[in-house]
Every structure is written in C-alpha cells, then in structure tokens.
Length: 248
Image 1 (tube, rainbow, N blue to C red):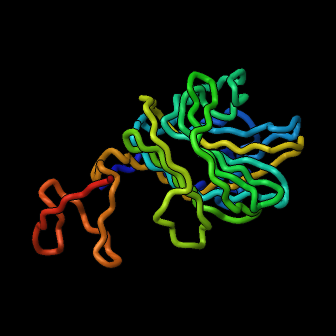
Image 2: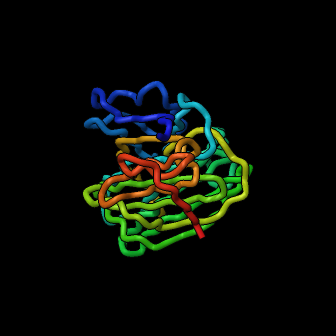
C-alpha cells in the first residue's frame, strides 16, 4: 500500500491564512469556503501566485492528486502543480518565479476559448523551463477539475478530468525523463495576457509515495475491484496466482 506523504483539505475560517505546512511565495493565498484560494496579482500580465508545501518530507517517485477550479470564465489564465521540487524561489528564473528552479510540473492553460486550452508537462532545470509534452484539452472556467501528476522512475504522466466524472484510465500527457530530481510539491496560479487578478481554488490534495507498494505503477483489477500485487503473485481472495506483468 502506497505511503501518504501529505494531504490538505483547507478546512478553516474564510479569510484565514493557509495551514502552516505551506509557505506562500507570492500572491494573496487564503482559505475561502474550505478551499485554498490563490489570487495572482493584477500588476502585470503573466503575474502569478505561488505556494510550496514545505512541511512535507522529500520524495522522488510521487503521485499528486488535487481539485482545481478557476473562478473566472472566458479569460486566459493558468494553474500549475509541481512535484520533485527543491522549493527554491528565484524570480529571475525563466518562468519568472512561477515554479521552483528544479521540479516537474503540470501546467494547465485555460484559454478564453475553452476548446483551445492545453495541459503541458514541464521540467524546470536550474531555472530554465523546458516543455516536454502538450495536449489540447477543453478546460472551462468556474468548473471543478481533478488533476493527477505522477512520476515513477523515468515515467512522467498527467491527466485532468471533470471532478464530477470517473477518473480516466489514460493519460493526457506522458513522457520519459532522465533527471534525478526529488523534493516536495507546490501550487501555482497565474493570469494570462491581461494584467488582471485571476483566482483559483484548490482542494482535496493528496500526495503519495509512488515508489512504495506497486513499484511498477500498475493496478490490477478483478471486475470492479482492485487486487493487491504481491512479490509472489496475485491474491485472488483465497490463493496466490502467479502473474507476469509487462509494460511493453
């Protein structure tokens, strides 16, 4: 069974600061209706809010799931989640401080035309932003989405889906990585091509150690039930059944 590294539900008084396990870097970050509200400043286009989960233990192979909701509709705006982060804050880096100098990120671009929105896997390497894989995805404003960003070994995967729907079994974006990054997680929100404040709510965050338990990153199912994968085989409820799993 995977080890839980961190959870957050942002339960608290509206207007209060985020829980102490978070370190706010920029923007107005408060609890609003039991969700984590991030408001990017309106001083310039592509301005951002960012906070890092500095209270969690460091890890490398990890699986992050969080609910994301943009508050505005019909405008360009960004939301991002990052893992394997060194939680550095350097406003001179290529992303202007959006992300730590070293991390992997899922960047969600909500376009004014929702059908042209995108999700992108990002690698931050010493402050330089490298986009690894991008897919077009219809992302509407004021809609709750689930986002999953997962790193297992050299595999980096992400998907985004409506929070009211069943989680898909396929990834929106996938790539192979070769870096040795490890660290913590964080969240980013940003306005787009207009200097205006943009707000996002985050909720129900869970981070698990994807390197424990099923280290191959597979889930095995019997009908609608997930079955445990053991070192000897697959448990069918009464006996171990030898099994061979291939990812080719």
